[in-house]
Image (cartoon, rainbow, N blue to C red):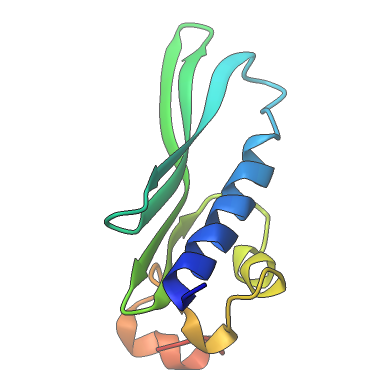
Amino acid sequence: MDKVTRYQKAILEVLEEYAQIKPANMGSVENQVIADKQHNHFQLMRVGWDNDEFVHDCVMHFDIKEEKVWIQCNWTELDVAEELMAKGVERSDIVLGFIPENERKYTGYAA
């Protein structure tokens, strides 16, 4: 299995595991895993109605660019970088995309 395929699998496992956790205070909001393997974009979305308010939120967003996993957003308490490493993604292949480029060298992950 090549690196990109392994990284796709790791990302999808993290997303699917977290998607099983339903927000207790949002009864009719559902979690949706969105996966575009061809273009290497992966998201966990929350979609639905919370009482009279429509919810459409990106909870997690990952991209794979040049064989590196970019964490674009993570609105959870889960340390998704650690989760990805536990699933075989190398620390040197993780980029915290939500951190300004000039500060990434201080994160301990890929810059």
